[in-house]
Length: 317
Ligand SMILES: Nc1ncnc2c1ncn2[C@@H]1O[C@H](COP(=O)(O)OP(=O)(O)O)[C@@H](O)[C@H]1O
Ligand SMILES: [Mg+2]
Image 1 (cartoon, protein in one colour):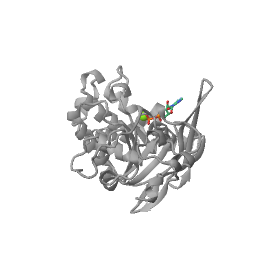
Image 2 (spheres, protein in one colour):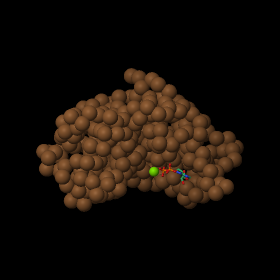
Image 3 (cartoon, helix red, strand yellow):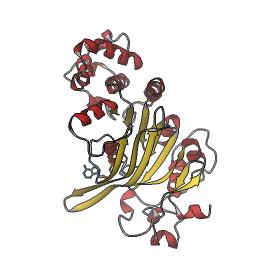
Image 4 (cartoon, rainbow, N blue to C red):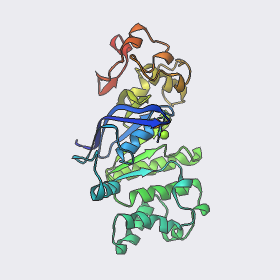
């Protein structure tokens, strides 16, 4: 199946007050229609920066992005606007995503206007999008203001707004982290239904492996800007190979996973990690590090069954 979106060796470097931050270091990925890819890793590992580059909200320092077969790495103007309609972000915080002074109807009409959809089509498109997120009849909701809605209802409106331009790709960055646990599954199920029915490619970004397991067929594990492990989500969670993935799996309660749950304590915090020099970026926090880990960085390589691993230990395992 051909990819809706693919990226090769994406890099992003920020310069802040004389300091250089290598936020993303050589990330490659591809997502097909109807497929959901998860990107997991702790705060600061570069997930959001990767998403922003894929959506062309941030220019990559290096690398290439292809969307529906076209190189969009440096697209501008009308072509960028057309891309924006097809590649939508689902905002993390529904309380921030909508203008509090606008009615729901006005917030929903805005993207249609921006993308040049004829006014005569607005009502039907909005009704269809509201039906997808189970806010029906739409007329009951359109005159309300955001403060009259619960967090879960707001996130449904935000999702409807993302679907309105007719996207082929949805990128959801921590889509439910601001919501009550009780409404999270409902939102994730709506996202999945929209993906299945519309054949969307989806990228979910989360620090929460339980969420990723619930919605994503394939997952990338990021550590300090790099992909350290990649594979089908069930295999990755049931048989993690990278010590960092093992630590992530051990740290979250993932139902029905009994294997390999012995705690593998990783040392320190992300800020303690080596930021430069040769060797594996995870070595100072890795309980299993050995000489070679300080001398050379392990490349991401195929280890079979659709899996990839960047760890010297993988040679022996
Ligand atoms: N606009 C920016 N300017 C400077 N540094 C940034 C910017 N955006 C992100 N960073 C830095 O890049 C790194 C990755 O951030 P981010 O992509 O937000 O990670 P995550 O989403 O995984 O938490 C962090 O060190 C962060 O401080
Ligand atoms: Mg983030």
